Length: 563
Image 1 (cartoon, rainbow, N blue to C red):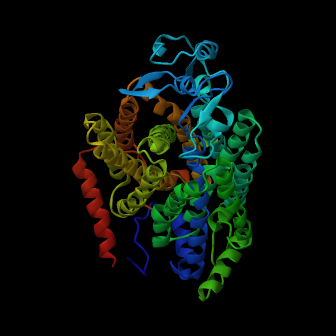
Image 2: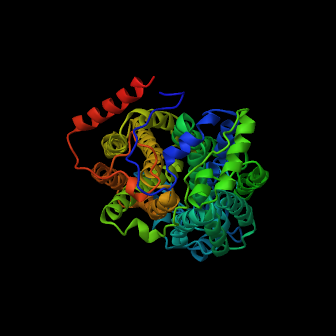
């Protein structure tokens, strides 16, 4: 460590006089690492991730399916026949009242009018059945209302329930792509606040939806701003902060902001058991972030990449005043604007294309596993609020361990270890006896732990691989591809109707395949963020594990030698 800043290996200087990331870090080193300016940016940006945690998984409660049965009209039926009107069926080895069938009411009325009693005079199981022609009665024991009970998304309309979540993630997919391109073109700050407002406005607007189709349209629009907000927030903080502050922010700060928002969701849902009041409570707080527009700065690094040196220096000078340090007369020198890169720049060269393909596969697999396990929380325990809280709490130790991994472990080794842990845990669930339900829940939480840690690691890994003019676009594309995984995650959960453990086997297989893909990626550990394509780390052959250990030891030794 030198001058209170972590030492990092320097890449060869590019012959082009573009602004380098290490030039930027050195140029603003006089600000320090944890001054008042950095603390303000750190906590404000972390707070903007709170609505993402609540909004991303509100579907766990909003679209959950309450217990239900066919509605039985009271007319011309005795109490005995009303109670016997629902047939029994075997579900998972247990005898339960049917959710989607009833005995024909005209037959029951005739038997009731004749004074016959079910079970004594009539063998009820031999009677003809029919669908729920008069609608359904929903239990209010857990929820007062959900979208499923509001629009009757059950029985023959059951397919609409997972499709609702898929439509949300389709919005996230589209938003991830366009927000990344727009942020590289127009700046990180405008896109951050635009996505915050989109998320807040459409969350509230959903409560006025008169039909399932309108609700899905508004949900899609809400998805446009959801994860896009998180990605813009992540990149903005990564480019403003330096040194240890950047590492702590990227590995823990913004991630814990998301996790704390996630943990408040079951609390809101417990006290607000109507889906409309829940969405209102989740959406309205987003509007309180609007005044931050006049507090948070634009990324000086992005401004430099656009040749807007004066504006970048003005931000840094204001930071110097806040930190009570004296800024040099000339902060940035030899700066030329970096040419704005199109999406095609990511695939023009073979090594860039291979890196992007591998990253997209890893992101895809991780997203399927993460959202599959997260959306399945309502099925883990008889109390969905406890299940959701457990799923949220496990993210905190995941982010803490991720912070240590980012500091001391090569990226490929850390991500591969996460996928291996997740895959083994998910494969093991099918081996647990039915009598030890707690162990199965613990293994699923271990899988969720791995998926969460992997998400944080991949955000950092992806940001470290790409230069400034491609970083947000690359992150946006990877997140966009990952959302195709989240789009199919709700349907993967539904595979349990064919075989109880099929969802876990599917997710575990994806995790194991991603171990191999991760080991083929280039390594970014011990390097500063690249500023141009030429400075991007190159892929190397996958060698023995001892090479990874040796690399970790060498990088750590270099850092300690500077203390």
